[in-house]
Each structure stands twice: as C-alpha cells, then as structure tokens.
Length: 139
Image 1 (tube, rainbow, N blue to C red):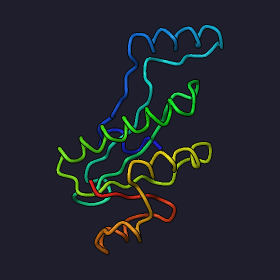
Image 2 (cartoon, helix red, strand yellow):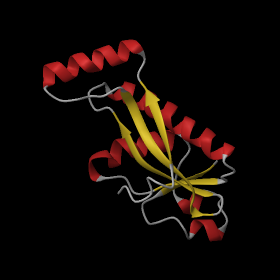
Image 3 (tube, rainbow, N blue to C red):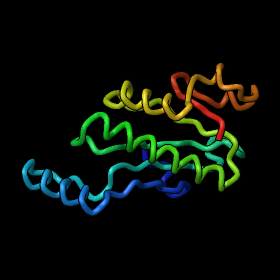
Image 4 (cartoon, helix red, strand yellow):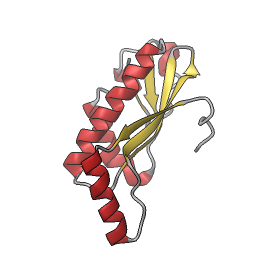
C-alpha cells in the first residue's frame, strides 16, 4: 500500500557507480529496468502512535545474490533506524511482509533486531499496536 507515502520519509540505498553500471547491463540483457537503487523503504514517523514508527515497503533489488541482498538490507534498515532516532521515535514496527518477501525479509528484520511484540520489551500500549505477524524493535 502507498497510503502513507505523503506522511513518510523514503529511505533509499543508492547504487555505487559500479553497481549502477552492472544494473544497467542486467536491464539491457533481461529486458527490464533495474533502476539505480539497491533498495528502499518508507519510514512513517508517529505512524502507529506518538514515538512509534512504521517501517514499510521494504524492497531490495532481486537480481543480486542473496548475500548481497542481506548486506544491503542491513544497511537500509540501519539507515531507517538512524532516521527514526533522529526524529524522536522510540519504536519501529515492520508490518507483515508480502508473501514473496516474507521468509527472506523476516531474516533481514531479525538480523536487524526486530522480533515478536511479546518478546520486545515494549510497554503494553505499544505491544497492542503491533498487528499479528508484524515485527517490532526499539529504536
């Protein structure tokens, strides 16, 4: 969903010049556009409640190795969390990921310290904001 695009901060992970050249070559060979981004997500400050951000639309290039995607996801999520801290957020919630990203994306989020609400140490009023299957972490 793009419902929060106008309320959020788009966090991007741009390609290096070399990575961009590789992506363009893959685009030409595969007949599709890979763009100049390794990944992106949307940080919605105070999206769930005051001090509780949503981390939505987690997306990474699919035409690189799983190891590269994991590395880029770590960099992208870390950047989003730094932005959240700078904006005074205390918690970040990642909603349930789409089916094609659910397994791989959950590993990325867990590696970044996200987990189940009940095990997060969040106050009860924050835990109740977390939808079933979503993940949360302190910022």
